[in-house]
Length: 327
Ligand code: ZN
Image (cartoon, rainbow, N blue to C red; front, side, top):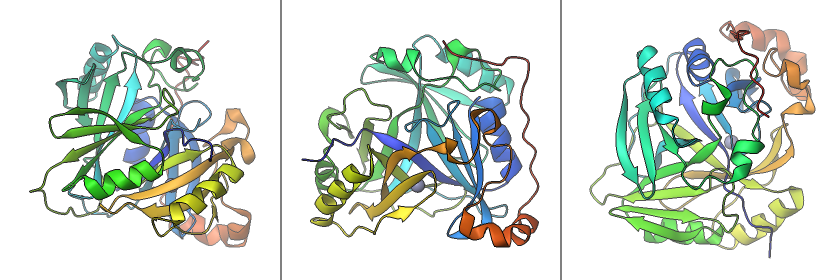
């Protein structure tokens, strides 16, 4: 039996204006810009990575910003909401901070045991902050708050809580989640919650909302492109690849520089990835310099000048008011 999959590794979405995307996630949400690179399959497009101070798996939200992308419309077979954990008691701070930045936010009540604050990013991507009542101590102790953010450490986002997938039917999606070791742990109305045996791992709340009447969406800016689960290492990934391959069509391992990936689509339509924890974002930059320069893989270096010329210039604002450092 392979090592259990431990919740989410990253979530990847589509954005439009790169600078606006960068500003929102660093200046407003206080995430660290951990990597400035390009989409390896389409090097004329940026690939931005945001996370905690070092880009710990389970904290990483990534974007393909296409400057002229039309806004998407969420529908069946898509991730409708991406949720971050915050400490209980931090929602008032966040509600005020979002309001101060002209971001409408709504307290959407208590879901299972947790209070939820819902808002959207500048491209309409639906985000949630969940006051994680049963957060394990490691969420408080181990995640390192981004060093250049002006969000007080005690309110900093604590990585992913989970995602919500919208589906017309549960059965086939449930079966695919079961293959990955995610089993039903709770149910509330049309929402069914799945978790892996990894328990309190980051991003280990995969919710499926069932709406038989919902139509398919239109992917575009604000749409989640795929979600990636965590494989402990390359050996665990190969074990899981063999297991998944018995049920679904799965790609060969692909080298994404910062992790190794396999991809497969669950029958409801959401693209899944299984990404390794290794080697991580420190492979080509020091912890201090993460995100400051454009990093591209070795095999694209000969084309660097052409690639740079095609990318819109961006400016990273690093707040020096507070060099936040969690204990
Ligand atoms: Zn990915």
